[in-house]
Image (cartoon, rainbow, N blue to C red):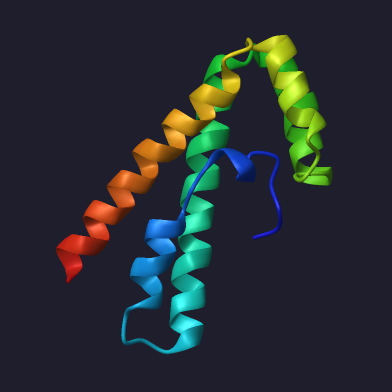
Length: 108
């Protein structure tokens, strides 16, 4: 996945380390990492949409579609959700990462 406006707020290093240590073909590892990125993205966007007033959804979704890397998205979210949105994103990502790691470790 491309660079996203929240990438600096989350850490996927533990997941990457776990996936990279698997004895699988590199293309399988790449697909797994892409799937994990997609899961995290969906969780964060869902959480944001729950907090964001519905009349702000079109602007937010259009911006995410056109410029998912734009750091101004966080400014928009601060203005329309609150100053703690970065912590909310971290918290949601941490929750999802822990769930993914638990699932990966149960597969070992």
